[in-house]
Image 1: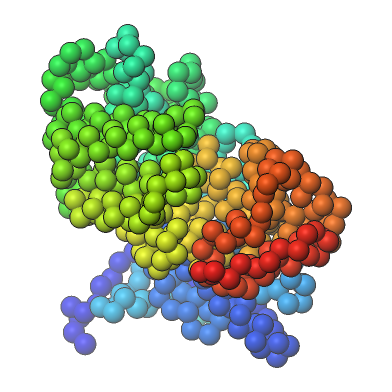
Image 2: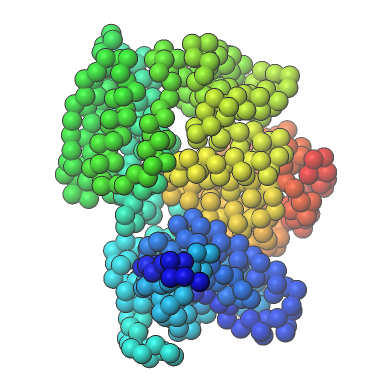
Length: 598
Protein backbone atom coordinates (compact mmCIF):
# COMPACT_ATOMS: atom_id res chain seq x y z
CA UNK A 1 0.00 0.00 0.00
CA UNK A 2 1.38 3.41 -0.94
CA UNK A 3 1.44 6.40 1.37
CA UNK A 4 -1.09 8.12 -0.86
CA UNK A 5 -3.67 5.55 0.27
CA UNK A 6 -3.45 6.89 3.84
CA UNK A 7 -4.90 10.14 5.15
CA UNK A 8 -4.11 11.68 8.52
CA UNK A 9 -6.77 13.90 10.03
CA UNK A 10 -8.45 15.05 13.21
CA UNK A 11 -11.57 13.12 14.17
CA UNK A 12 -13.75 12.23 17.14
CA UNK A 13 -13.71 8.50 17.85
CA UNK A 14 -16.45 6.66 19.79
CA UNK A 15 -15.65 3.19 21.16
CA UNK A 16 -18.17 1.05 23.03
CA UNK A 17 -18.65 -2.48 24.29
CA UNK A 18 -21.26 -4.40 26.28
CA UNK A 19 -20.45 -4.92 29.95
CA UNK A 20 -20.79 -8.54 31.10
CA UNK A 21 -21.43 -9.83 27.59
CA UNK A 22 -19.94 -13.28 28.25
CA UNK A 23 -22.09 -13.71 31.36
CA UNK A 24 -25.23 -12.73 29.43
CA UNK A 25 -24.40 -15.18 26.63
CA UNK A 26 -23.82 -18.00 29.10
CA UNK A 27 -27.15 -17.29 30.77
CA UNK A 28 -29.33 -17.01 27.63
CA UNK A 29 -27.53 -16.78 24.31
CA UNK A 30 -30.62 -16.29 22.12
CA UNK A 31 -32.00 -13.43 24.22
CA UNK A 32 -28.54 -11.84 24.37
CA UNK A 33 -28.11 -11.93 20.60
CA UNK A 34 -31.57 -10.35 20.20
CA UNK A 35 -30.66 -7.62 22.70
CA UNK A 36 -27.36 -7.01 20.92
CA UNK A 37 -29.12 -6.65 17.56
CA UNK A 38 -31.55 -4.11 19.06
CA UNK A 39 -28.68 -2.18 20.65
CA UNK A 40 -26.79 -2.09 17.35
CA UNK A 41 -29.86 -0.57 15.70
CA UNK A 42 -29.92 2.19 18.30
CA UNK A 43 -26.18 2.84 17.91
CA UNK A 44 -26.34 2.92 14.12
CA UNK A 45 -29.36 5.24 14.02
CA UNK A 46 -27.87 7.74 16.47
CA UNK A 47 -24.41 7.66 14.92
CA UNK A 48 -25.78 8.34 11.45
CA UNK A 49 -28.21 11.04 12.62
CA UNK A 50 -25.33 12.91 14.28
CA UNK A 51 -23.06 12.97 11.22
CA UNK A 52 -21.04 9.94 12.25
CA UNK A 53 -19.99 6.76 10.48
CA UNK A 54 -19.84 3.22 11.85
CA UNK A 55 -16.40 1.71 11.34
CA UNK A 56 -16.94 -1.69 12.97
CA UNK A 57 -19.49 -3.64 15.01
CA UNK A 58 -17.52 -6.82 15.63
CA UNK A 59 -18.77 -8.98 18.49
CA UNK A 60 -20.24 -6.82 21.25
CA UNK A 61 -18.19 -3.73 20.33
CA UNK A 62 -18.93 -0.55 18.37
CA UNK A 63 -16.39 1.76 16.74
CA UNK A 64 -17.48 4.96 15.01
CA UNK A 65 -15.87 8.14 13.68
CA UNK A 66 -17.42 11.63 13.79
CA UNK A 67 -16.56 14.93 12.15
CA UNK A 68 -17.11 16.78 15.44
CA UNK A 69 -16.75 15.95 19.11
CA UNK A 70 -20.22 17.35 19.74
CA UNK A 71 -21.72 14.91 17.26
CA UNK A 72 -20.02 12.04 19.07
CA UNK A 73 -21.12 13.13 22.57
CA UNK A 74 -24.67 13.91 21.42
CA UNK A 75 -24.91 10.46 19.83
CA UNK A 76 -23.51 8.76 22.95
CA UNK A 77 -26.02 10.50 25.23
CA UNK A 78 -28.88 9.57 22.92
CA UNK A 79 -27.69 5.95 22.69
CA UNK A 80 -27.54 5.53 26.47
CA UNK A 81 -30.92 7.17 26.85
CA UNK A 82 -32.45 4.95 24.17
CA UNK A 83 -30.92 1.77 25.61
CA UNK A 84 -32.14 2.65 29.11
CA UNK A 85 -35.65 3.25 27.84
CA UNK A 86 -35.61 0.02 25.84
CA UNK A 87 -34.51 -1.97 28.92
CA UNK A 88 -37.00 -0.36 31.32
CA UNK A 89 -39.00 -3.59 31.74
CA UNK A 90 -35.97 -5.93 31.67
CA UNK A 91 -34.72 -7.42 34.93
CA UNK A 92 -31.46 -5.98 36.19
CA UNK A 93 -29.48 -9.17 35.67
CA UNK A 94 -30.57 -9.38 32.01
CA UNK A 95 -29.91 -5.75 31.08
CA UNK A 96 -27.27 -5.15 28.44
CA UNK A 97 -25.33 -2.05 29.41
CA UNK A 98 -22.70 -0.45 27.19
CA UNK A 99 -19.60 1.48 28.22
CA UNK A 100 -18.71 4.32 25.85
CA UNK A 101 -15.43 6.19 25.47
CA UNK A 102 -14.83 9.22 23.23
CA UNK A 103 -11.58 10.93 22.22
CA UNK A 104 -10.73 13.72 19.81
CA UNK A 105 -7.37 13.27 18.15
CA UNK A 106 -5.35 12.36 15.08
CA UNK A 107 -6.24 9.22 13.19
CA UNK A 108 -4.91 7.56 10.06
CA UNK A 109 -7.70 6.73 7.65
CA UNK A 110 -7.31 4.12 4.92
CA UNK A 111 -9.03 4.34 1.54
CA UNK A 112 -11.63 1.79 2.68
CA UNK A 113 -12.64 4.04 5.60
CA UNK A 114 -11.03 2.11 8.45
CA UNK A 115 -9.11 4.20 11.01
CA UNK A 116 -6.05 3.59 13.17
CA UNK A 117 -3.81 5.47 15.55
CA UNK A 118 -3.67 6.90 19.05
CA UNK A 119 -7.07 8.57 18.55
CA UNK A 120 -8.65 5.11 18.31
CA UNK A 121 -6.51 3.59 21.05
CA UNK A 122 -7.29 6.33 23.58
CA UNK A 123 -11.04 6.10 22.87
CA UNK A 124 -10.84 2.36 23.56
CA UNK A 125 -9.00 2.97 26.84
CA UNK A 126 -11.56 5.59 27.91
CA UNK A 127 -14.31 3.09 27.19
CA UNK A 128 -12.62 0.74 29.66
CA UNK A 129 -12.76 3.49 32.31
CA UNK A 130 -16.49 4.08 31.80
CA UNK A 131 -19.13 2.56 34.03
CA UNK A 132 -21.67 0.16 32.52
CA UNK A 133 -24.31 2.45 31.00
CA UNK A 134 -21.91 5.40 31.23
CA UNK A 135 -19.79 7.68 29.04
CA UNK A 136 -16.20 8.79 29.62
CA UNK A 137 -14.47 11.39 27.45
CA UNK A 138 -11.01 12.89 27.18
CA UNK A 139 -9.99 16.43 28.08
CA UNK A 140 -9.79 17.24 24.36
CA UNK A 141 -13.44 16.29 23.90
CA UNK A 142 -14.46 18.22 27.03
CA UNK A 143 -12.84 21.37 25.65
CA UNK A 144 -14.47 20.96 22.25
CA UNK A 145 -18.02 20.49 23.58
CA UNK A 146 -17.91 23.00 26.43
CA UNK A 147 -21.22 24.90 26.44
CA UNK A 148 -22.42 23.07 23.33
CA UNK A 149 -24.14 19.97 24.73
CA UNK A 150 -26.63 19.72 27.56
CA UNK A 151 -24.66 17.55 29.97
CA UNK A 152 -22.56 17.74 33.11
CA UNK A 153 -18.92 16.66 33.31
CA UNK A 154 -17.21 15.15 36.36
CA UNK A 155 -13.43 15.46 36.30
CA UNK A 156 -11.89 12.05 37.04
CA UNK A 157 -8.33 13.35 36.93
CA UNK A 158 -5.41 12.01 34.95
CA UNK A 159 -5.58 8.30 34.22
CA UNK A 160 -2.67 6.04 33.30
CA UNK A 161 -3.90 3.78 30.52
CA UNK A 162 -2.33 0.80 28.82
CA UNK A 163 0.04 1.40 25.88
CA UNK A 164 -0.40 5.20 26.00
CA UNK A 165 2.77 6.95 27.17
CA UNK A 166 1.17 10.02 28.75
CA UNK A 167 -1.71 10.01 31.28
CA UNK A 168 -5.14 10.85 29.87
CA UNK A 169 -7.38 13.28 31.75
CA UNK A 170 -10.87 11.78 31.80
CA UNK A 171 -14.34 13.17 32.42
CA UNK A 172 -17.52 11.29 33.26
CA UNK A 173 -20.50 12.60 31.23
CA UNK A 174 -24.02 12.78 32.64
CA UNK A 175 -27.09 13.88 30.69
CA UNK A 176 -29.11 16.78 32.09
CA UNK A 177 -32.86 17.25 32.10
CA UNK A 178 -32.96 19.02 28.73
CA UNK A 179 -33.02 15.53 27.20
CA UNK A 180 -36.17 14.56 29.08
CA UNK A 181 -39.41 14.00 27.20
CA UNK A 182 -41.12 17.27 26.19
CA UNK A 183 -44.13 18.39 28.19
CA UNK A 184 -47.26 20.18 27.10
CA UNK A 185 -45.61 23.59 27.18
CA UNK A 186 -43.97 24.78 23.99
CA UNK A 187 -40.36 24.20 24.88
CA UNK A 188 -37.50 22.39 23.28
CA UNK A 189 -34.06 21.11 24.22
CA UNK A 190 -31.19 23.33 23.14
CA UNK A 191 -30.41 22.12 19.63
CA UNK A 192 -27.37 24.29 19.06
CA UNK A 193 -24.12 22.63 18.04
CA UNK A 194 -20.71 23.85 16.88
CA UNK A 195 -20.56 24.75 13.21
CA UNK A 196 -24.31 24.37 12.94
CA UNK A 197 -26.19 27.58 13.84
CA UNK A 198 -29.83 27.08 14.82
CA UNK A 199 -32.57 29.23 13.31
CA UNK A 200 -36.29 29.89 13.63
CA UNK A 201 -38.08 31.89 10.91
CA UNK A 202 -41.13 33.62 12.40
CA UNK A 203 -44.17 34.22 10.17
CA UNK A 204 -43.72 37.48 8.30
CA UNK A 205 -46.33 40.12 9.07
CA UNK A 206 -48.76 41.02 6.29
CA UNK A 207 -48.46 44.80 5.90
CA UNK A 208 -50.62 45.05 2.78
CA UNK A 209 -53.69 46.29 4.63
CA UNK A 210 -55.68 43.37 3.17
CA UNK A 211 -56.23 40.27 5.37
CA UNK A 212 -56.79 38.30 2.16
CA UNK A 213 -53.07 38.70 1.51
CA UNK A 214 -52.10 36.73 4.63
CA UNK A 215 -51.54 33.67 2.47
CA UNK A 216 -48.90 35.57 0.48
CA UNK A 217 -46.91 36.64 3.56
CA UNK A 218 -47.20 33.11 4.97
CA UNK A 219 -46.08 31.69 1.64
CA UNK A 220 -42.99 33.89 1.56
CA UNK A 221 -42.14 32.72 5.08
CA UNK A 222 -42.62 29.05 4.21
CA UNK A 223 -40.53 29.34 1.07
CA UNK A 224 -37.68 30.88 3.06
CA UNK A 225 -37.97 28.12 5.69
CA UNK A 226 -37.89 25.51 2.93
CA UNK A 227 -34.83 27.06 1.32
CA UNK A 228 -32.74 27.48 4.47
CA UNK A 229 -33.77 23.98 5.61
CA UNK A 230 -31.89 22.54 2.63
CA UNK A 231 -28.62 23.80 4.10
CA UNK A 232 -27.04 20.96 6.10
CA UNK A 233 -24.94 23.46 8.06
CA UNK A 234 -28.07 24.98 9.61
CA UNK A 235 -30.56 23.54 12.08
CA UNK A 236 -33.96 25.03 11.20
CA UNK A 237 -37.18 24.80 13.21
CA UNK A 238 -40.24 23.61 11.28
CA UNK A 239 -43.08 25.80 10.08
CA UNK A 240 -45.62 24.23 12.46
CA UNK A 241 -43.68 25.46 15.48
CA UNK A 242 -42.76 28.94 14.29
CA UNK A 243 -46.31 29.72 13.11
CA UNK A 244 -47.52 29.28 16.69
CA UNK A 245 -46.25 32.86 17.12
CA UNK A 246 -48.24 34.31 14.21
CA UNK A 247 -49.82 37.69 14.99
CA UNK A 248 -48.30 37.73 18.46
CA UNK A 249 -46.13 40.40 20.01
CA UNK A 250 -43.16 38.25 20.84
CA UNK A 251 -39.96 38.64 22.80
CA UNK A 252 -37.26 37.21 20.53
CA UNK A 253 -35.28 36.02 23.53
CA UNK A 254 -38.34 34.08 24.71
CA UNK A 255 -38.82 32.61 21.22
CA UNK A 256 -35.21 31.46 21.19
CA UNK A 257 -35.60 29.85 24.59
CA UNK A 258 -38.89 28.13 23.77
CA UNK A 259 -37.73 26.82 20.41
CA UNK A 260 -34.18 26.08 21.54
CA UNK A 261 -32.44 28.22 18.90
CA UNK A 262 -29.73 30.88 18.83
CA UNK A 263 -31.02 32.93 15.86
CA UNK A 264 -34.45 34.24 14.85
CA UNK A 265 -35.51 35.78 11.53
CA UNK A 266 -38.53 38.06 11.59
CA UNK A 267 -39.96 40.47 9.06
CA UNK A 268 -42.89 41.85 7.13
CA UNK A 269 -44.28 41.72 3.59
CA UNK A 270 -46.13 44.47 1.74
CA UNK A 271 -47.67 43.59 -1.63
CA UNK A 272 -49.11 46.45 -3.68
CA UNK A 273 -50.03 45.87 -7.30
CA UNK A 274 -46.95 44.58 -9.09
CA UNK A 275 -44.60 45.65 -6.30
CA UNK A 276 -43.51 43.80 -3.18
CA UNK A 277 -41.45 44.96 -0.21
CA UNK A 278 -39.88 42.69 2.37
CA UNK A 279 -38.31 43.92 5.58
CA UNK A 280 -36.22 41.26 7.32
CA UNK A 281 -34.13 41.20 10.49
CA UNK A 282 -31.83 38.42 11.67
CA UNK A 283 -31.55 38.56 15.45
CA UNK A 284 -29.30 36.94 18.04
CA UNK A 285 -31.86 35.38 20.39
CA UNK A 286 -29.48 35.41 23.35
CA UNK A 287 -28.58 39.09 23.28
CA UNK A 288 -31.55 40.41 21.31
CA UNK A 289 -29.14 42.27 19.05
CA UNK A 290 -29.55 42.56 15.29
CA UNK A 291 -27.07 40.65 13.15
CA UNK A 292 -28.45 42.36 10.04
CA UNK A 293 -31.58 44.17 8.95
CA UNK A 294 -32.51 45.09 5.42
CA UNK A 295 -35.36 46.23 3.20
CA UNK A 296 -35.89 44.58 -0.19
CA UNK A 297 -38.02 46.32 -2.87
CA UNK A 298 -38.77 44.33 -6.01
CA UNK A 299 -41.25 43.81 -8.79
CA UNK A 300 -43.56 40.90 -8.07
CA UNK A 301 -42.02 39.05 -11.01
CA UNK A 302 -38.72 39.06 -9.09
CA UNK A 303 -40.17 37.44 -5.96
CA UNK A 304 -38.17 34.25 -6.38
CA UNK A 305 -34.89 36.10 -6.75
CA UNK A 306 -35.82 38.12 -3.68
CA UNK A 307 -36.40 34.97 -1.61
CA UNK A 308 -33.11 33.55 -2.82
CA UNK A 309 -31.35 36.75 -1.78
CA UNK A 310 -32.82 36.57 1.74
CA UNK A 311 -31.66 32.96 2.02
CA UNK A 312 -28.16 33.84 0.86
CA UNK A 313 -27.98 36.71 3.34
CA UNK A 314 -28.89 34.34 6.19
CA UNK A 315 -26.31 31.79 5.11
CA UNK A 316 -23.61 34.45 4.76
CA UNK A 317 -24.44 36.13 8.07
CA UNK A 318 -24.27 32.83 9.97
CA UNK A 319 -21.01 31.94 8.19
CA UNK A 320 -22.31 28.67 6.81
CA UNK A 321 -20.29 27.04 4.04
CA UNK A 322 -22.34 25.61 1.20
CA UNK A 323 -21.19 22.56 -0.74
CA UNK A 324 -21.64 22.38 -4.53
CA UNK A 325 -24.72 20.15 -4.18
CA UNK A 326 -26.38 22.61 -1.78
CA UNK A 327 -25.63 25.53 -4.06
CA UNK A 328 -27.26 23.62 -6.90
CA UNK A 329 -30.32 22.82 -4.79
CA UNK A 330 -30.77 26.45 -3.77
CA UNK A 331 -30.24 27.66 -7.34
CA UNK A 332 -32.79 25.13 -8.59
CA UNK A 333 -35.69 27.26 -7.42
CA UNK A 334 -39.38 26.71 -7.90
CA UNK A 335 -41.47 27.76 -10.91
CA UNK A 336 -40.78 31.04 -12.70
CA UNK A 337 -44.53 31.48 -13.20
CA UNK A 338 -45.66 33.93 -10.52
CA UNK A 339 -49.35 33.17 -10.95
CA UNK A 340 -48.79 29.40 -10.68
CA UNK A 341 -46.75 29.95 -7.52
CA UNK A 342 -49.52 32.16 -6.15
CA UNK A 343 -52.04 29.35 -6.71
CA UNK A 344 -49.78 26.87 -4.95
CA UNK A 345 -49.42 29.23 -1.98
CA UNK A 346 -53.22 29.54 -1.73
CA UNK A 347 -53.68 25.78 -1.90
CA UNK A 348 -50.99 25.08 0.65
CA UNK A 349 -52.40 27.70 3.01
CA UNK A 350 -55.87 26.15 2.71
CA UNK A 351 -54.49 22.65 3.38
CA UNK A 352 -52.83 23.81 6.59
CA UNK A 353 -55.27 26.36 8.02
CA UNK A 354 -58.81 25.46 6.89
CA UNK A 355 -61.03 25.36 9.97
CA UNK A 356 -63.54 22.99 8.38
CA UNK A 357 -62.21 20.12 6.30
CA UNK A 358 -64.96 18.46 4.29
CA UNK A 359 -66.02 17.79 0.70
CA UNK A 360 -66.17 21.52 -0.11
CA UNK A 361 -62.68 22.08 1.33
CA UNK A 362 -61.29 19.14 -0.65
CA UNK A 363 -62.82 20.32 -3.93
CA UNK A 364 -61.38 23.84 -3.43
CA UNK A 365 -57.88 22.50 -2.71
CA UNK A 366 -57.90 20.22 -5.75
CA UNK A 367 -59.15 23.02 -8.01
CA UNK A 368 -56.43 25.42 -6.83
CA UNK A 369 -53.61 22.91 -7.31
CA UNK A 370 -54.95 21.91 -10.74
CA UNK A 371 -55.04 25.58 -11.76
CA UNK A 372 -51.37 25.93 -10.75
CA UNK A 373 -50.54 22.95 -12.96
CA UNK A 374 -52.49 24.43 -15.88
CA UNK A 375 -50.40 27.58 -15.56
CA UNK A 376 -47.11 25.65 -15.34
CA UNK A 377 -47.29 21.91 -16.12
CA UNK A 378 -43.64 21.51 -15.12
CA UNK A 379 -44.12 22.89 -11.59
CA UNK A 380 -43.57 19.96 -9.19
CA UNK A 381 -45.06 21.19 -5.92
CA UNK A 382 -48.75 21.37 -6.98
CA UNK A 383 -48.52 17.70 -8.03
CA UNK A 384 -47.24 16.96 -4.54
CA UNK A 385 -50.12 19.00 -3.14
CA UNK A 386 -52.61 16.90 -5.12
CA UNK A 387 -50.92 13.71 -3.92
CA UNK A 388 -51.34 14.80 -0.29
CA UNK A 389 -54.92 15.97 -0.89
CA UNK A 390 -56.02 12.64 -2.38
CA UNK A 391 -54.13 10.72 0.30
CA UNK A 392 -55.97 12.70 2.99
CA UNK A 393 -59.25 12.09 1.17
CA UNK A 394 -58.48 8.36 1.27
CA UNK A 395 -57.94 8.57 5.04
CA UNK A 396 -60.80 10.93 5.91
CA UNK A 397 -63.28 10.15 3.11
CA UNK A 398 -64.25 13.78 2.53
CA UNK A 399 -65.29 13.09 -1.05
CA UNK A 400 -65.04 9.27 -1.14
CA UNK A 401 -63.12 9.66 -4.41
CA UNK A 402 -62.95 6.29 -6.19
CA UNK A 403 -59.35 5.12 -6.28
CA UNK A 404 -58.19 8.09 -4.18
CA UNK A 405 -55.00 6.35 -3.07
CA UNK A 406 -54.10 5.37 -6.63
CA UNK A 407 -54.64 8.98 -7.69
CA UNK A 408 -52.39 10.10 -4.84
CA UNK A 409 -49.67 7.71 -6.05
CA UNK A 410 -50.10 8.97 -9.62
CA UNK A 411 -49.62 12.60 -8.62
CA UNK A 412 -46.71 11.78 -6.29
CA UNK A 413 -44.94 10.11 -9.21
CA UNK A 414 -45.58 13.16 -11.39
CA UNK A 415 -44.24 15.44 -8.65
CA UNK A 416 -40.96 13.49 -8.53
CA UNK A 417 -40.76 13.39 -12.33
CA UNK A 418 -41.16 17.19 -12.52
CA UNK A 419 -39.01 17.91 -9.48
CA UNK A 420 -36.59 15.08 -8.59
CA UNK A 421 -34.77 17.46 -6.22
CA UNK A 422 -37.94 18.74 -4.55
CA UNK A 423 -38.12 17.42 -0.94
CA UNK A 424 -41.90 17.91 -0.75
CA UNK A 425 -42.39 15.59 -3.73
CA UNK A 426 -40.48 12.78 -2.04
CA UNK A 427 -42.21 13.39 1.29
CA UNK A 428 -45.61 13.14 -0.43
CA UNK A 429 -44.47 9.92 -2.14
CA UNK A 430 -43.37 8.52 1.25
CA UNK A 431 -46.76 9.23 2.84
CA UNK A 432 -48.64 7.70 -0.09
CA UNK A 433 -46.39 4.63 -0.16
CA UNK A 434 -46.98 4.13 3.57
CA UNK A 435 -50.73 3.93 3.07
CA UNK A 436 -50.25 1.67 0.06
CA UNK A 437 -48.27 -0.64 2.37
CA UNK A 438 -45.14 -0.31 0.26
CA UNK A 439 -42.98 0.31 3.31
CA UNK A 440 -39.62 -0.21 1.63
CA UNK A 441 -40.52 2.50 -0.89
CA UNK A 442 -41.88 4.72 1.90
CA UNK A 443 -38.62 4.49 3.84
CA UNK A 444 -36.54 5.18 0.72
CA UNK A 445 -38.63 8.23 -0.21
CA UNK A 446 -38.52 9.68 3.30
CA UNK A 447 -34.74 9.27 3.32
CA UNK A 448 -34.49 10.94 -0.08
CA UNK A 449 -36.55 13.86 1.27
CA UNK A 450 -34.12 14.12 4.20
CA UNK A 451 -31.09 13.98 1.90
CA UNK A 452 -32.52 16.99 0.08
CA UNK A 453 -33.74 18.74 3.25
CA UNK A 454 -31.89 17.60 6.40
CA UNK A 455 -34.25 19.70 8.58
CA UNK A 456 -37.50 18.13 7.33
CA UNK A 457 -39.33 17.28 10.57
CA UNK A 458 -42.31 15.68 8.81
CA UNK A 459 -39.97 13.39 6.86
CA UNK A 460 -38.22 12.37 10.09
CA UNK A 461 -41.61 11.58 11.62
CA UNK A 462 -42.65 9.56 8.58
CA UNK A 463 -39.38 7.62 8.56
CA UNK A 464 -39.89 6.80 12.24
CA UNK A 465 -43.47 5.68 11.66
CA UNK A 466 -42.41 3.47 8.76
CA UNK A 467 -39.77 1.80 10.97
CA UNK A 468 -42.54 0.98 13.47
CA UNK A 469 -44.69 -0.58 10.77
CA UNK A 470 -41.66 -2.51 9.45
CA UNK A 471 -41.23 -4.05 12.89
CA UNK A 472 -38.18 -1.97 13.95
CA UNK A 473 -39.66 0.12 16.78
CA UNK A 474 -36.38 0.91 18.55
CA UNK A 475 -34.83 2.09 15.29
CA UNK A 476 -37.81 4.44 14.92
CA UNK A 477 -37.14 6.35 18.13
CA UNK A 478 -34.14 8.50 17.00
CA UNK A 479 -36.08 9.75 13.95
CA UNK A 480 -39.12 10.62 16.06
CA UNK A 481 -36.99 12.38 18.66
CA UNK A 482 -35.31 14.37 15.89
CA UNK A 483 -38.74 15.40 14.60
CA UNK A 484 -39.65 16.63 18.09
CA UNK A 485 -36.48 18.73 18.26
CA UNK A 486 -37.20 20.33 14.90
CA UNK A 487 -40.94 20.77 15.46
CA UNK A 488 -41.67 21.09 19.20
CA UNK A 489 -45.15 22.56 18.70
CA UNK A 490 -46.19 19.39 16.85
CA UNK A 491 -45.13 17.23 19.78
CA UNK A 492 -48.57 15.74 20.37
CA UNK A 493 -48.49 13.79 17.09
CA UNK A 494 -44.94 12.60 17.60
CA UNK A 495 -45.75 11.50 21.15
CA UNK A 496 -48.28 9.10 19.63
CA UNK A 497 -45.55 7.77 17.34
CA UNK A 498 -43.22 7.35 20.33
CA UNK A 499 -45.92 5.61 22.35
CA UNK A 500 -46.61 3.28 19.42
CA UNK A 501 -42.90 2.43 19.11
CA UNK A 502 -42.56 1.66 22.80
CA UNK A 503 -45.76 -0.42 22.82
CA UNK A 504 -44.68 -2.51 19.84
CA UNK A 505 -41.20 -2.94 21.39
CA UNK A 506 -42.74 -4.16 24.64
CA UNK A 507 -41.50 -1.14 26.61
CA UNK A 508 -44.87 -0.60 28.25
CA UNK A 509 -43.97 1.94 30.95
CA UNK A 510 -42.39 4.24 28.37
CA UNK A 511 -45.43 3.71 26.13
CA UNK A 512 -47.78 4.73 28.94
CA UNK A 513 -45.81 7.92 29.64
CA UNK A 514 -45.82 8.99 25.99
CA UNK A 515 -49.47 8.13 25.34
CA UNK A 516 -50.73 9.81 28.53
CA UNK A 517 -48.99 13.01 27.49
CA UNK A 518 -50.35 12.73 23.96
CA UNK A 519 -53.90 12.41 25.28
CA UNK A 520 -53.39 15.44 27.51
CA UNK A 521 -52.32 17.47 24.49
CA UNK A 522 -54.95 15.98 22.15
CA UNK A 523 -57.99 15.11 24.32
CA UNK A 524 -60.12 13.86 21.40
CA UNK A 525 -57.73 11.12 20.25
CA UNK A 526 -59.13 7.60 20.01
CA UNK A 527 -56.17 5.48 18.80
CA UNK A 528 -53.81 6.81 21.47
CA UNK A 529 -56.37 5.81 24.10
CA UNK A 530 -56.67 2.33 22.61
CA UNK A 531 -52.90 1.90 22.64
CA UNK A 532 -52.70 3.30 26.19
CA UNK A 533 -55.32 0.78 27.35
CA UNK A 534 -53.25 -2.01 25.81
CA UNK A 535 -50.02 -0.85 27.48
CA UNK A 536 -51.79 -0.56 30.83
CA UNK A 537 -53.21 -4.05 30.37
CA UNK A 538 -49.71 -5.43 29.91
CA UNK A 539 -48.59 -3.67 33.11
CA UNK A 540 -51.54 -4.93 35.14
CA UNK A 541 -53.23 -1.53 35.42
CA UNK A 542 -56.61 -3.05 34.71
CA UNK A 543 -58.85 -0.42 36.29
CA UNK A 544 -57.11 2.45 34.52
CA UNK A 545 -57.13 0.53 31.23
CA UNK A 546 -60.90 0.09 31.46
CA UNK A 547 -61.35 3.74 32.41
CA UNK A 548 -59.30 4.81 29.39
CA UNK A 549 -61.37 2.53 27.15
CA UNK A 550 -64.57 4.10 28.49
CA UNK A 551 -63.16 7.56 27.69
CA UNK A 552 -62.42 6.36 24.17
CA UNK A 553 -66.02 5.26 23.68
CA UNK A 554 -67.22 8.63 24.96
CA UNK A 555 -64.98 10.37 22.43
CA UNK A 556 -66.00 8.07 19.57
CA UNK A 557 -68.96 5.81 20.37
CA UNK A 558 -68.66 3.99 17.01
CA UNK A 559 -64.94 3.32 17.35
CA UNK A 560 -63.64 -0.08 16.26
CA UNK A 561 -60.02 -0.85 17.00
CA UNK A 562 -60.12 -3.88 14.72
CA UNK A 563 -61.14 -1.66 11.79
CA UNK A 564 -58.54 0.95 12.72
CA UNK A 565 -55.73 -1.59 12.95
CA UNK A 566 -56.77 -3.04 9.60
CA UNK A 567 -55.97 0.34 8.02
CA UNK A 568 -52.52 0.57 9.63
CA UNK A 569 -49.78 -1.09 7.55
CA UNK A 570 -48.12 -3.20 10.25
CA UNK A 571 -45.92 -5.77 8.56
CA UNK A 572 -45.64 -8.23 11.44
CA UNK A 573 -48.62 -10.03 12.92
CA UNK A 574 -46.78 -10.28 16.25
CA UNK A 575 -46.89 -6.48 16.63
CA UNK A 576 -50.66 -6.47 16.21
CA UNK A 577 -50.97 -9.44 18.56
CA UNK A 578 -49.10 -7.52 21.27
CA UNK A 579 -51.63 -4.68 21.07
CA UNK A 580 -54.52 -7.14 21.18
CA UNK A 581 -52.99 -9.09 24.07
CA UNK A 582 -52.82 -6.02 26.29
CA UNK A 583 -56.52 -5.36 25.80
CA UNK A 584 -57.33 -8.97 26.62
CA UNK A 585 -55.28 -8.76 29.80
CA UNK A 586 -57.39 -5.76 30.81
CA UNK A 587 -60.58 -7.74 30.20
CA UNK A 588 -61.69 -5.46 27.40
CA UNK A 589 -63.87 -6.60 24.47
CA UNK A 590 -62.37 -9.21 22.15
CA UNK A 591 -60.45 -7.54 19.35
CA UNK A 592 -59.79 -9.71 16.34
CA UNK A 593 -56.29 -9.35 14.95
CA UNK A 594 -56.67 -8.02 11.41
CA UNK A 595 -54.91 -10.15 8.81
CA UNK A 596 -55.66 -8.29 5.59
CA UNK A 597 -52.48 -6.75 4.23
CA UNK A 598 -50.61 -7.06 7.53
